[in-house]
Image 1: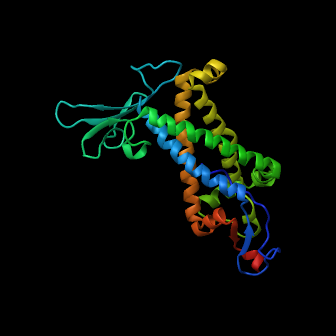
Image 2: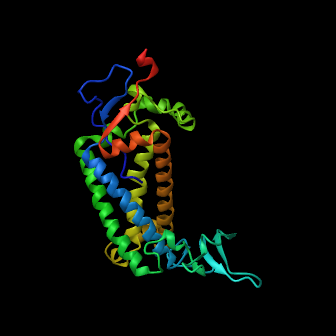
Image 3: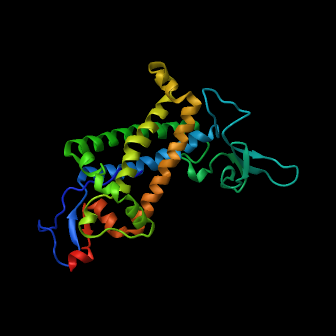
Length: 293
């Protein structure tokens, strides 16, 4: 995820009044807190993903329950040596196997030699096989991510941003079908409608803020033996350490999917305008045709 949705501070032009001409109205859309926490989260999420894949590579398999059932993994990335031919990377998902040579299970090192590992070196941090190194990177930036997110949430509560800008209203729910169709057809709002989030944006941001991220934190904590000793209820909540690890893995890739969709929408809806708003806070809104007429 990026650092969370931007905060709509005010719908005003640089001169302090709403534009009535055909030129785009430049509004101050993102506060300093939102912009800073956004870019810190971009850094944190990138490093958390890459270091998390390094940790996963120490045992590239997922299970359900409290113990590792090595004979029956839900997901496994391995390398096999056929009787004839070079080694192959195999990914198994619920008993169904796929050849993923070069990407998962088996990739190549800098010298071009086959290298058995879940995810390739270019996707992990550090690049070499190092569980200890991956944990150091992961734990440091996990706490930075938590602190940064807490600052964002605290600022959002104090400014009223969370309930003012992120809770869909009844009218938005009534038009959720039209909004969905507009997104699928890449029809983006203009004029007054562009000054606030649509229902799909609000639901997506809420799902990340109150769903994905809290469960990512809890499942991560439940994999810590020290935390389990202090709060054993965590393991019971997720059905065991291996279940928590699997949920953590699924949530991580769900978050990656969210970020990819988010970045795609930024690109197709106006990359220059969107980047400027997240750097300077200023966002240009085109007037709708009805307003212009």
